[in-house]
Amino acid sequence: MQVDFDDTTDFENADRGFIAELDPPVVKAADGRVVWDTSVYGFLAGDCPDTANPSLWRQAQLCNKQGLFEVTAGIYQVRNLDLSNMTFVEGRAGVIVIDPLISAETAAAGLALYREHRGDRPVTGMIYTHSHVDHFGGARGILPEGHPQVPILAPEGFLEHAVSENVYAGNAMNRRAVFMYGAALDKAPDGQIGAGLGMTTSTGTVTLIPPTVDITRTGQEEEIDGVRIVFQLTPGTEAPAEMNFLFPDQRALCMAENATHNMHNVLTLRGAVVRDSRVWARYLDEAIARFGDKADVAFASHHWPTWGRENWTAWLAGQRDMYAYLHDQTLRLTNRGLTGPEIAEQFEFPPALDGLWANRGYYGSTSHNVKAIYQRYMGWFDGNPAHLWEHPPAELARRYVADYGGIEAIVDKGRRYAADGDLRFAATLLQHAVFAEPQHTGAKKELAQVYDRLGHGAENGTWRNFFLVGAHELRTGPSPTPTSTTGPGMLNVLSLDMIVDSLAVRIDGLRAAESDFTMDWELTDEDRVHRLTLSHGALTHRTPTADVPAPGHADLTLTMTKAQLLTALGGGGFEGITMKGDESLLHTFIGLLDTPDPQFPIVTP
Image (cartoon, rainbow, N blue to C red; front, side, top):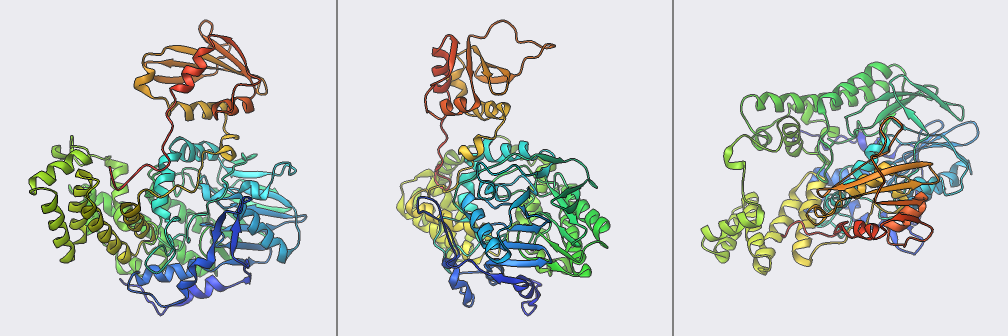
């Protein structure tokens, strides 16, 4: 580790501009349930214990600074009321809100804190920097139902990518997010101490209000409430739809989540589309070139700002070079015949990059980012035929256990490897034991202890959380998934195409293979007819047009509003829906929808 623990610059910047904190630092839902509480991290005021990596402990101390901060005249941030920051830009008549956190409850609390110290300014605009839920989920906490319409800006493609990530694969991603952020873990020196990018995720109500203005090109300039904003589109970087933007009159640059004070993910552990570290580096370089002489401060939707042109351009240059180096060296070694795990094992940064605090792997890591870059170009298969058709985990585990002489023998071997300090192979052997005999308490106990040790030594916050949540699941069973991105606050804003797509991925294909029918969904409030076809277990759909009409009559036609459709799909009945044709097909269709398990096990079969 090349970093300088005597360097206090980050602490000075993280404290700079402090105005006030939320006191008490607790946010509750309407039913009294706590959705955010920073008081549980009080232990971070102490020295680093043996159960934490000193570098990650330092990062947690920095992220745990909570409250309202001034970035520059007219720009303020609320930090540590969720995983992300919420930024306020004051205009002529009110305030523009950037990235309203994950939950409506935390967003409302942040807005109230701002107004307490800056006046009861109306919200005159909102900006989503990108399509991840911690940057839009609290929208209704800022603009409640019935609020006068204001411009809502987002990068082109925002809604499509927000839905594809948070709805189509939402159940699996939310389940893995339990491991990644450790929200259900005890907050303690031997438990959850943060996630690198922030402390953890709030567990309130996720909402979404569709954008009203798309940002479609770099250089596009918009004005909201007298505030000029110049945009830089950065698709394919930290999110498929993302943008940086400059406030030229305030000489302040928002870097969204493209530059933070840690290494970010090329492929996040909760799952996502693999990001392009090559174009990520290029967009950071473009930001320096485009805005380098136009801003005195750069801030992001996580962590703390960087003041001074030389300082923030150096920060961006360090991040640029990190992502470029990751990309280029991974491909150099790929072209020499190494596989992703082999490259990750030997990969090294030069000291000048490794020594930058902002490049440390607290959230993304060198190991899993290298594998992600390899995956982006080469896919899951490493070219070795032995890996082309391997047994799935449980079947593979049973064979390992048999070959090692039975369950007790493999548990004993795992215990010995752990005692010798080879925790990685101990985890491999003990994981086989658990998957071969899931009820064997000794195997689960030994593996949980190995995960504890791996977590306590990890510099990466998300790795630590994965290990510790895995240990918790082995001891007590699956933890609940506290956050849902498929509730009414999200589904109500989906287009009809998105709603049908979200249903298509729930069709039980083998059970549906015997059914063959068409349905027309006529939405009276959208003046639109949509044809659904279930054939060979696959659900396809389209809107017929004059040029390409739907063939024949549908087997069933439903005439309804979008709200009535959502009520029916949610199990609320079919009141107000007019049906023409074979009404039993609707019940058949709903019966073919699989219900995802929000608490499926991960560390046991």
